[in-house]
Image 1 (cartoon, rainbow, N blue to C red):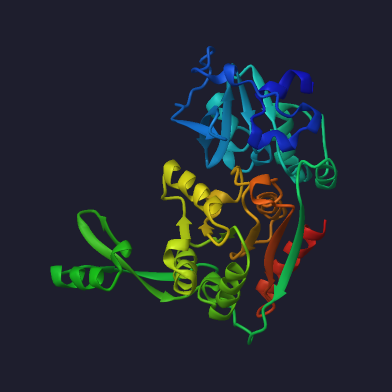
Image 2: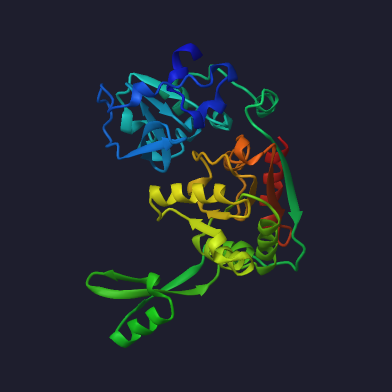
Length: 361
């Protein structure tokens, strides 16, 4: 089986197959547009891997999938069936529904615990034919070992509202002066048009995510301290506003030229520049939203800091895998994951405990 598929597996995905099949990726099979034009979604990006290997990249609902000759490599097949309604079983593969060859790779197989997602996985790709543990990949030298630390956030309790998101009220803009004042106050992003009229959203109450994480100054100061103390740091956040706050705080400490933030609004070129930025200096820090939590090859990461919330096992595993890649150029022999035991509310504590359980397993 691996003799057949090894030539399709580019370097960033090779850690998911047995080590004896590494370095067999055949650049020739993807030097030009696939001969069998089975793809019903336009291929718009050609990824550069290690400045030598090109692969065509299509993205379906933020999941990266790679075109190789007349087949499809589903890079994160655990996402199959993660939608709802008519997209349940075809969310990822619909764009290449006529592909004669389909290869699925994943760093987590917990999706088989869900019968609907298992049906989508097996129905589109077939049953699992090979499994390896992280410990086995560390033992054969493919991945590096990782130390995971969850720091206790000591602070007064925060009362939750029961609403995760912030609450807003829609108001009408009646004069140019009113609009100018909103823009001057930095609220331009809350202005929108509907039916020929202009409105703005005014926040009337912060939700639990804002109170527990985004505007939690004690917790944010811990994140900043850990970012400064460590090397080649990637900080993953959930809310863009949180990323902006951390970027400013870190920049004030070490200089804004040593910090770079990327999110879903940035194009592929900007994201590639961020990866290169991390390698340039050991004290450079990248802050990234969910776009870097999976399907991203950044082996230079030495320290991963989890700034946002979350509790799902797949999410935890995908974040964790970012730090396990080898990077000999920087002398990386072990990675570090920093997370937080958020015991300042029952909600945040439950989420932290579920992440701890996932790390332990």
